[in-house]
Length: 281
Image 1 (cartoon, rainbow, N blue to C red):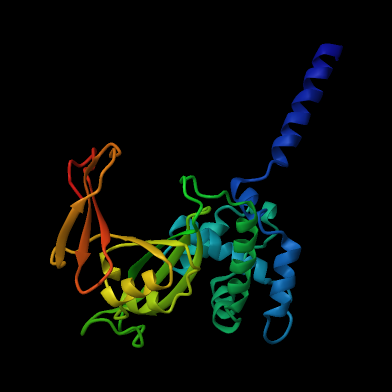
Image 2 (tube, rainbow, N blue to C red; image 1 turned 60 degrees about the vertical axis):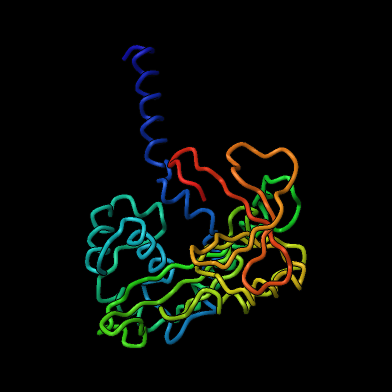
């Protein structure tokens, strides 16, 4: 064999070997949570006898794949993972049956994943950037979403007469858009009731939508030295005051003081023209 041909074969072998050891994208994502940290938490949140061949790491990754892939059932998840059986060794897991996965999901405490969430959240906070606005005040974004559920399967999630739902309340810190306040209630819980229980630092700014309208809560925020930004409801009782002097930023169509409802303090009303939709808000 000639020297050049021998060298070419060696280089080809090295390329094939390197390709065989390349991590998948999923493995790179999971690397954000070291395996030894997860195993330590899994040991603290385990019930019953020790697993023989199955592990909570396998449960975590199999369910994680199911979530990312949008699978609809445990059977669908297991079949999807099984179809990639030649790649899962990168993740440090083994194939599992639907029955095993169902049994572990039912019997093992979900508190493990709560602990995993807070560990990841703390790691994200350490590297998250600050918000890019000119002010230095802490900025929080509040919102809520309703998740529909089948009332026959979840009878506790009462919402309407024939439907069930839960409501997820979330408060994001604008520094990295990481969750600071999270609560899960039944679908009938009003956003403002959840917001009243929050402990917000003095001098912070909180932004929310019309669903959080509660004038007494708004007044309490101002009393505690907390600024807020909200959208007005169409039926809000507004009394116009003097216009604010000074140059206006592009898109601002109105900037004035107003009286809102029975709140004795004056507020600031800003109207903005959205260049994309042409709507004023």
